Amino acid sequence: MRLGRVNQMQFFRFIAFFLLFEYHASIWVPNYANNSVSGLFALFFFILLSGVMSSYSLYSKEDIAPTASNIFYYVKKKVFRFYPLYLVTNLIAVIYTVPTYMVSLHNYKEVLVKAFEFIATIFMFQTWIFRPYVYNAASWYVASIVWLSILNIPFSHISRKIMVKDKAIRKFVGIAVLGVIYSLLASAFSMAVLHLSEADGITAHPLIIGGIYITGMAIGNIVIILKERLQAANVNTKLFTAIEITLVALSLVVIEYKGSGNMFIYVLPIFLDCALLIVFMLGFGKISKLFSKKFFVMLGNITFEAYLLHQVIIFLFATSNNWASGSTLGNIYALTFCFTTSLVAAAIIYNTKNMSRSRYQEQMKIKNDIAPIRKNVFETAI
Image 1 (cartoon, one colour):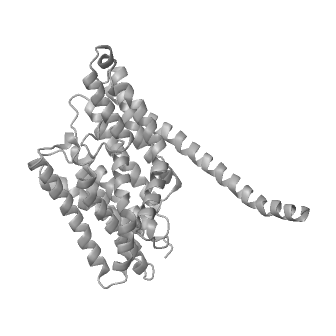
Image 2: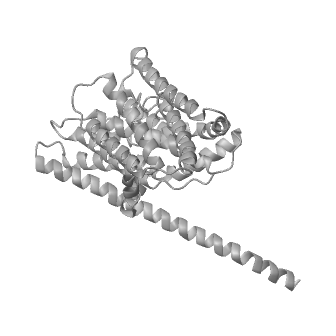
Image 3: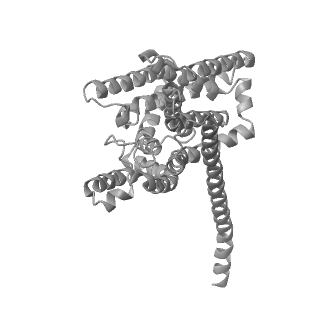
């Protein structure tokens, strides 16, 4: 089955990035009411969306055998796609992560620790050693998603077999629920038994967030099945629009929640994200059509670059301008500058990559068009 594009999801990526930016930037604002719920909402959304899109994109291709060589080639392509900006932002982050005094005071122990952390980060191992937030604190997500992408081909292969059986949706719902339960239990075990906390990166470790990622892959397959069934039926656009508006409204309520924390309020974003993904991936409502407009898609297109850049820009600005200020106007200026700079830099990088890719594809097309001509000329000459 040839699946249609889901451009409406791009704007949700941008909103999730904005929530994470606000959460990370709030550290530098004195007396700012830090909203961890909005941060978790955005974090879970990104992890789930990555899982959803892996299932969605692989289903559009032929079934790939889950051999070691196929998985290695698949992961390698992902690394080549993400790594250049990942590497550059972590190199820049050395400026504010390794202070000069460590070297000038011959504090070699700290320098060696920083060197070890840098090597782990460069090779995308930082989350495995519970040091995800050193150097570019946002880059752990790329590292964890690369490791979790090892699951993509095997899960896609198994999913195709589940789809041809009875009650496929129920089975995928069961997998999705088990994925959430696994991640919650793994997180609880890390805190209760291993005495780890969020500062150690328990919501960044692949073995902990892996359950949420599998939930995303299961949701991707649920969406595929529903699309196959609903495309043949008369879809009630008004009903789907009402559902979309309701989910957006509920999301705003959860995002703005600043009350006391409890297990329910931290788990709720996961299930709300799941509902958002299913409904908006289907794209039958008018809100989905609105978010498919060129402007909203454009914002989503530069989200990956903006996400990797924003922490570096925030830290460079904060450390060089003494951001920690009680001035409301000063904080507004700082937030606006860092957010705008992240988007502008992201847009430049994204468009540069696109132009380079287009130029390469054009050169390859010319090369392929000329090859038969050269061959004919050569044979004629002989």
